[in-house]
Length: 228
View 1 (cartoon, one colour):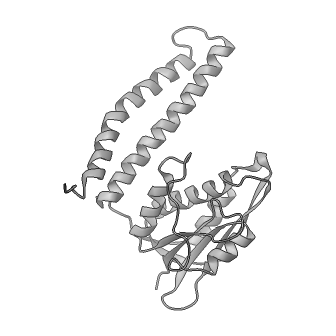
View 2 (cartoon, one colour):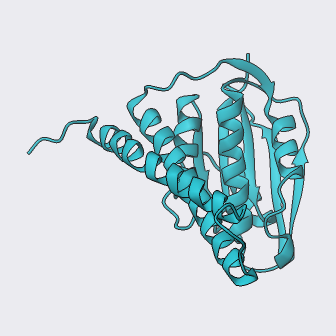
View 3 (tube, one colour):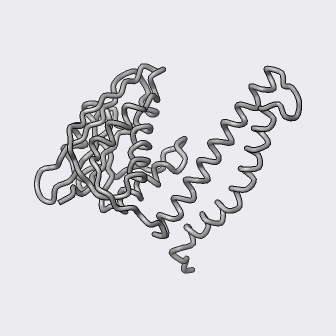
């Protein structure tokens, strides 16, 4: 039996359409209850509703990711084209990232620019944010996660962003997508942020790959064409 190439994006689109309305309705009623519009709440009731509201927010984020995933798969999304410094963008994202700090996980940046690329700054920013968050979240012990931006040698020239511990970053920057493990986008607990990130990077002519050594769980690198 032959399966149409666009079945998955169409299924995603349908699922998003069917889920978005009930999620919005549930979120609205939860906010009304938390504002005590239906009467005063006990501390226990408020705590339970706050947890339900957080879970509903995560579900809403997943629905948005499903929508973006479907558009990228079907190539229906229009990517913006603008020049920006990916080293500056990465350093800014890392400065605002606090995941793992309560577990003794530090984030260190080594991003000397400029590394000018052309593309959809908003979508690339979201992809980078997901990759940094993933590395911090999956670091199982106290230590340092490094975000390093560099320019590849040779022609064509690439902007490379590597994320992991020292050993992983060394492995990532010394490899290419051709001789490194493929990027694992289907790790649990992260929704569709990583599959979306891979498709965004590839839509810009770039690539994602994983580390071969070090504390490599969650470690990854991406490259994008440098602006001529």
